[in-house]
Image 1: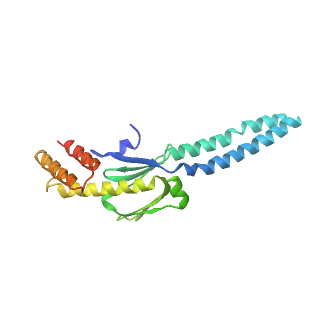
Image 2: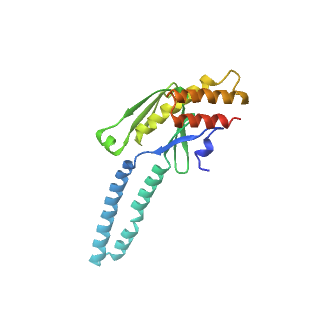
Image 3: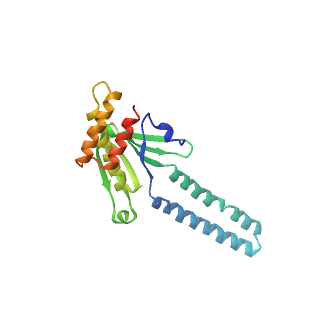
Length: 209
């Protein structure tokens, strides 16, 4: 079980998992490549001169520095995850020390998506989650597949609202579940719910029996 999976509550499921777009790695790739090229050029020049050959060898060893810097940037990118569950939006980051921010779907008031022309071509963008909490805004920068992320957030928020609408006072009893499934099926037939949404809600209800 991964770190994020350990944060999930009972009956909470990960619906969508994504990261920042790979474009955010272009800076570290270009910067460390130029750094490595500089070290190689200087090291080879010193080695060929024969005057400071040991310094040339030391320079080649210094190639480990840009390699390590890029590896750190990659691991930092890989460990920064954005998730939509059936209850909340979760942002987890950190290689060793973890930092987690989550926003309950119930408190999400609006979602703002910003995509540049290049972002539309490469499928990345910025998302601002407006919530009723004190923080107010949770900004996700250079997110991969932002349209899909936003759509799934809104779908799960709507589904969460349906749970509250169909839940009887005092909670859901085992005998209420077949009736609720029948009501959801009627909504599916009317086109209010998609087949995927119906199946997800049906599985969640059946897990409570």
